[in-house]
Length: 343
Length: 209
Image (tube, rainbow over all chains, first blue to last red; front, side):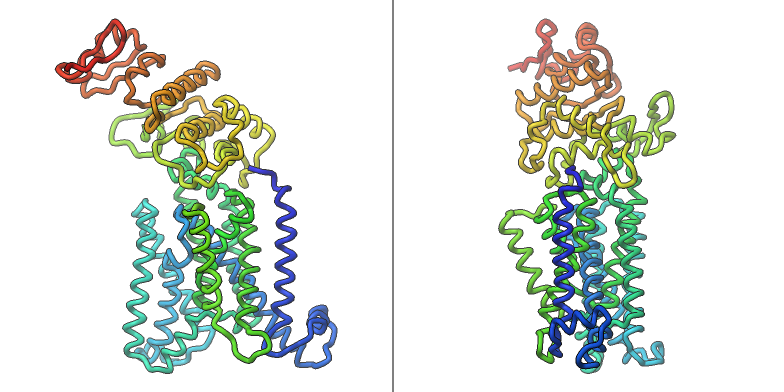
């Protein structure tokens, strides 16, 4: 494994790119604010128009931070999945974690009209939505972990994750058949994904969740590297497979579940970023890959969000559409260029 | 072989290592006692040779897997021993089967264990590479004083190269040096006598036409 030093220059460059993306992201939006004024506002000076400062501090900066957390969280969970399942196509969606979150959201939004008795409040606000999808993703996570105790085979786990996805689709279609058009629209909007609606408080909560996920991942770097050889070899190298598998699954659940809860299901970041990262950093060492996907995921998400904003126009494109439009061709391009997906 | 390497649970019986039952050793302890080369392919062929061999040092590295100077020395020693230092920065998917097998052996050497277990290390290789791998194993065993245990179907090559052979046959397994086993006529009825016979003079098998 090459020395960390030779990668330092890449990391400095990537970090600078991230800062630039961050600044560009907050300087662009539906209201046109000059770049200098944006910078003035960030360093705490007053802007020409008072509302600009308000927009930047209460809308754009939280949104940019959300983009960073969402991108990093999903990218890292994708990397963990790909190594744990030794499958280049694995991502947060595969384990059913995103499906679980969608199921929670669907039950809350679409189900509230059916089961008014249970959701007597009848209110579907952002917090209850985040709560429902968090509960949904953790229920799936618990189910997957229960299965993981009995089934030693990771392939079986993967299929179980896909089954949860099918169950979600089925439940959502049954619910949407019975629910009102208004509720259905609300669910569809949630499933588009959105990173613009988080308050500072929600942002701090998301930050905490992502931080815990990242910490567990950092402590799993050594078993993750051993897993590149396969589970039998990892065991022969002294890796406690059971404990490592649990901590990796928990980290993934926290990262993917937390992000989906607050930002909706966001496609392709989790799958594409680890592959893109491996293109730049020609290594399989997770000591390099873990920090690299964090920065890379943040950059990609900031760029996607900047595009989704459609600068200087009032409309906002669904972020999920942008990540898919960028992410899917990337995966296809990688497949064609390398003829096979390696991880 | 997988059971001996603690990769697969045992069906029955007792396995002891250093006079203590295998279950009494922790996984971490075993990692510095036994290294394995299994038949299953490694999960990621995207690893470079150096990265793969370095993973053999995991039982000795810190929580982050940082390699010390001692680790790096052991790694380059292992690479030299199987003569793959030139392939160091190649990716595993660029290697031939024979080269990959040598890399796996280098990884086992880098793990620095008294015992190296290999599960059919010569399958998928042609005769020349089979002999090459087994001669390499013999050199390693004699130079480093390690115990190398491998399973094989290549009885003829094994007779010529191994120090000790255990013939696994239902009810009548026998163990000893090749010469002892030939004298004990252990090879004679290894296969149905009407199809294959053993020639004690040359130490080879002959097909009955």
